[in-house]
Image (cartoon, rainbow, N blue to C red; front, side, top):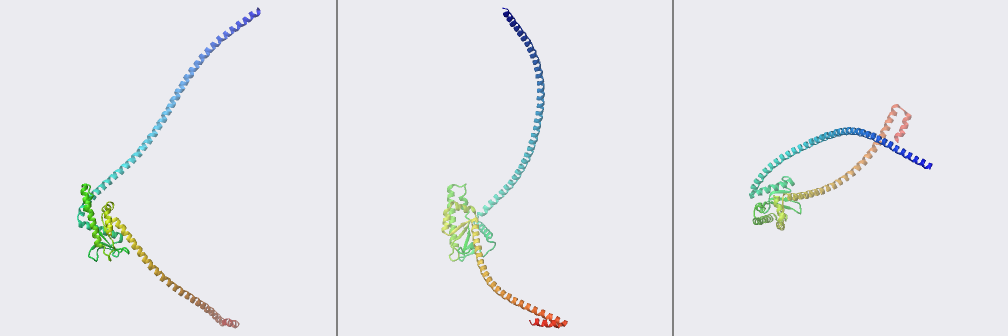
Length: 360
């Protein structure tokens, strides 16, 4: 019984101790929480102040960096603008210069157009066209063969039949003497290619143009191909490249007709090529001719050199014999000189010895 009461008392005491300790702990915790709140408030204030200071400092530094970057970018932009302005200025000046040149070229083109119009008005006359073709032909011949090279070509050459060719080319065999005549069928050609005319009119003028060309081919074939005097072919010279191109591009029947008549149609360009080939053939023939002459002269020179060598050998042998005789004379002279010296000094003993050597 006593033990039970003592046990209960102990339990009550323990509970009282626990309740008292809880109250003490709660008051300590409250106090500590209060202190912690005050400390946190202070720390938060300090942190806020520090944070505001750091933000202001970082903002100032960032602002300064942005200003420096903007200044650098501004300088770069100004530099690029200056460079681009300089390039633009140069380009503008070049454009102005080009425009001035274009303006000058346009003036020259206008002047040339007027000259062409005047030239067309001049070439409407057949006689004037004939003179133009002859002058053009002469210019080509002088450009290839030189001025007044009568051994190769002659202008206004009269054949045995009495007809006069604009030019006769004295080409080497097997080509031989070749007549060249200038023709300039312009009227019907201009009407044939005139786009302002109707197609029927242009077709009609085309037929007339072909008739003109065939008539010229027949005239050259009958007048300038003479058996026994000229070669069996002749050249029709068209002084206009446009007409030559038209014939070769769209009128093969004219080319075939000329081929049957042994007449070759040429333009200034093709005639220069043909004459250049003839010039090369002539030069090769001349070179071959001179090569045979040089070969013959070299053979003659070889014979003369053989004679020269024989005579030189004989002379060398004669010189060797004379040289030997000269050496013998020199030896005899030396002996006579020594004998005179012995006589002069009256060396009798030596004189007798010299007699023996002198007789040798």
